[in-house]
Length: 98
Image (cartoon, rainbow, N blue to C red; front, side, top):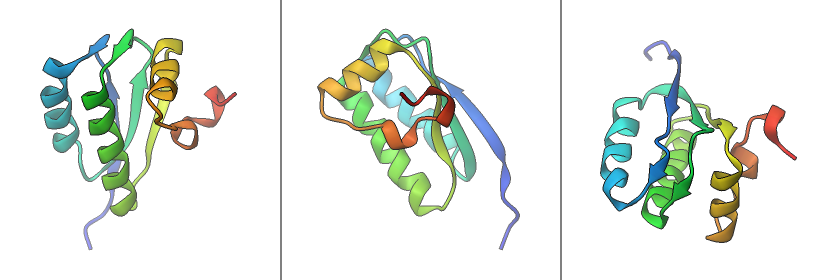
């Protein structure tokens, strides 16, 4: 079995709309195989498709037995995810859980 690669950080765009969902998927695919911390501190708006991409990635990382966490998350990101019914609380870094 190959050694685990070092952790990476992905900074999300301010707007995660339909146009950004494909780019987000591609960025996540390129980081597969690494522990991953998502920085959502700059996010101002989240669309449902981008939320689905993020949750699919979280499941993929879980199946790969790698870390997938949100190291930082803006209020807008957290509130929007909650509003559309996506619970990310278990994925938040301990420092930002409320």
